[in-house]
Length: 385
Image (cartoon, rainbow, N blue to C red; front, side):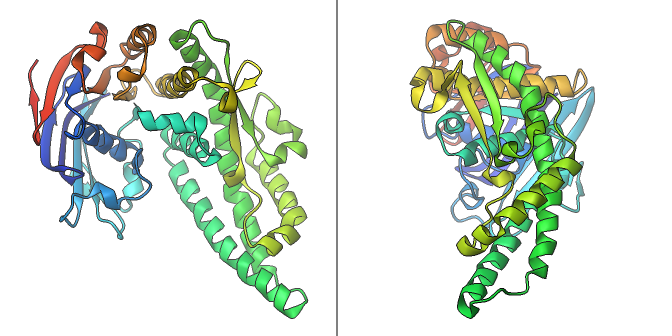
């Protein structure tokens, strides 16, 4: 797969931009603040319906504009597909495939398969568990776009159940007795159902990612010890099957979630928050026996984040048939790497049908990736090679 054409209107700093790409490497060169990252962010948004830089859509719309539009022409297995997303803050996004409006924006997920590595990915290694959960859930959806609906349903259940816990807890404290919790029983069932599907998909993704990430880390940082990934869940204490090579069936996970919800109900009512479910899980990352957080150097953390993305790329390549492999985007990463890691990354990236690179200094990019070059300057994108 490759992006043949990208156009944006009122996206970030761009009033408009049109870029035509070829397969193979393309390097976008420009000083900081010229908008090169905004262009690859637009592609990332088409692939995930979210930004890798900000949690909400409002900053994506150019100041003074009401909406932003991203359009791309994609070529996969000899066929071209046109994807369009209109972003309007405060309203549901609208999307089109080949000019036809789709019922929901998330129906375009899976059209553009893309793995993007950016400086913000250091948060996957060093940040809060929410960063690792987001990384994993994005990978789950990339592997199976239908999981976007499960993810959305689970988040809706959490919101509704949280409101109910707060009101029921307050009523219990005020009355000194127990309120009618039959409605909470219903939401427990919904949480267990959607949470089990999400948890099963996460466990499968971690198991599949583990060897790819370890191999990528060994190539990027050959002198280091092994990168290890372990899914951490509170259910592990009561469900030993979580550590088995094959992930448990959703029915077993649903039953375990229901049992844990029953055990934790009093605590949840007291605190008014959801204390059970995959929204509280984490991925434990380590080098050998030492946890990355607190022990890894900056270079090791950077290499681990890079390995997670490269491992994701290799996993998605394995998931899809030849000719439908994802696009690899490297956003301003070479400046952070020493010469050895640059060369190793270039060797790995060179296998992609299309790799898009952004950089402030062209010489930072190894020769293996010096394909087509675009200069990004003063509100324009110009191909110079």
